[in-house]
Image 1: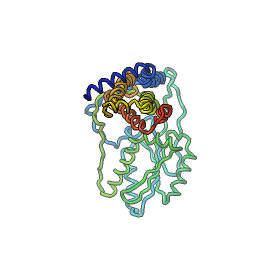
Image 2: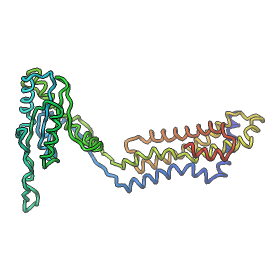
Image 3: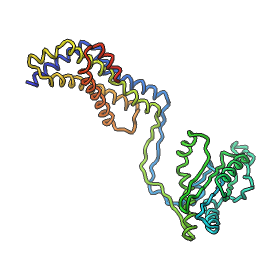
Image 4: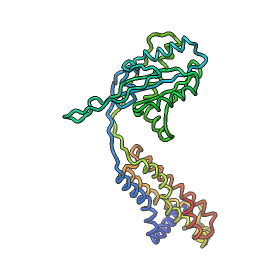
Length: 366
């Protein structure tokens, strides 16, 4: 009996949806149109692909290597200002500073006194054939000094930047010890955006600088003459990185809120009209089960949402809006979201008495 009732109600729902053919097509097409607009905008934004080669059996190298810490495009002139805690005696302070000076990281650097200024960039001399500078270099130099207070360290920092001409190749680090094994590293940045960019770009660099301090600290506290830290790049397979417009990737879930506005409005309107005209009550009187009524509309809109989700998933992967997510995950998320919107329509239909209110509320609910 339930099957026959569902069959009849589904046929009736199909007739109602065919009468409102335009609204039915909008329910299916609007989500796909949104993706099409995003996809066309994405293609116009200039996507780029970058292929990264695989790494297999990379060599193990010592982190005490000048080329690992500063290459030709990074900092060549460095100031290290140190504030020791009360846990350090004079001998430990001197030993720690000497361990930093003798570290292999500074083997190609020239140690300067605190008062001496760094060398400036040499004048450019162009190669007549290649028109490339042949001596556009900055000398590798560094300073190490001990400050007694944070204020003194801050003054040294200000003075160093006031005197420095080649700031793009200069780096100042303040190292403040809280105890024998706990310390903080201070470095310069202009604003929050630059700080985020600096942290993102210099994770590897800061790791090496912390390793420099750890090596020197271990030698100081344990009297171990030779202490090295090795590094190795983990193996990985080759892969292609698609650098799509990140703004579109962020905005796509926001536009997803509007995918099923027509479905919600139309379903809520149908339910309230039947409630307002007492069609459902009349059918219940002649033997219709209430569950059959709800199930019929759930099946009808489940089919519409499934078709719409298939089209949306195809459009997303055609325009490569989500390149690292399997298509099945996108399809499942879309269809579950659409069905949840319809469930809310069922709930709201029990609270609304007029169809005009239902149409307005269906849009506002999204």
